Structure formats: C-alpha cells, structure tokens
Image (tube, rainbow, N blue to C red; front, side, top):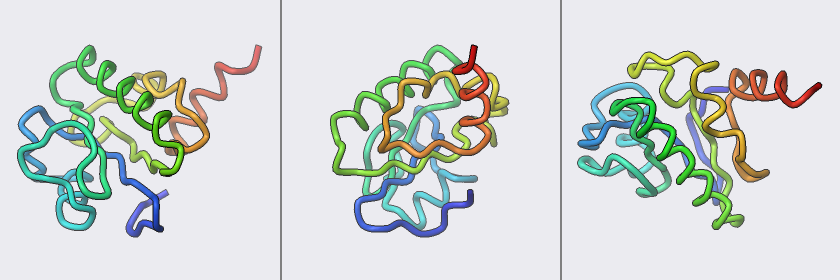
Length: 123
C-alpha cells in the first residue's frame, strides 16, 4: 500500500531519526505533504507521526511501543503505518514487525508486517 493522500482523521506513520531531519524517503514525504516538523524526531506532528528508526533497535522498539499506546489512547484517529524502518534505516520487516504486534484496530500496518504477524498468531 502506497500512501499518497489521507482521509479526515487519518495519520501517516513514518520512520525518522532523533534529530528529526526529514530529508528522504517517507520522512520527506511526511514533511512535504502531511505536516511533519523539521527537528521533531518522534511523535504526532501535523497529520503524521514519527518514530526514530535510526538510533538502534532498542530505541526503535521503545518508540514503536509508545506509538502503539498513543494510537490506543486516540481511537478517533486511524494510523496508516509505512514500512517503518525498512527503507533508509535498513531493517527487514521480519526484524521490526513485532514492535507493532499490540497495535489495535485503528492502526493499519503494511502488508509485509501483517503477513509476518499473522504467521505467529496461528499455532
């Protein structure tokens, strides 16, 4: 799924870096189209939500779990998650999909993440 537009109440979730230097990939798209703020590396900004994927897996996982909690606290919003961390950061979906395993119904994960998580839901 390629996200190019948002409906009312939708939020674009993308990978960033600690400095919030949204220079390429989905981060640049969020900056140019969905209100991401230069210099903000995590959290809600405009109609987008940043997760630092460039500061190591521990930081990435912690921020992904904070995002999941944020989404749970905001059921009025629908969060469209890109393949966070699988572009410039260089992770594979099987390395990071589990960071989003507790996401609720208002979080739309990319197909690659859903496939990985569904394989582990079945006995």
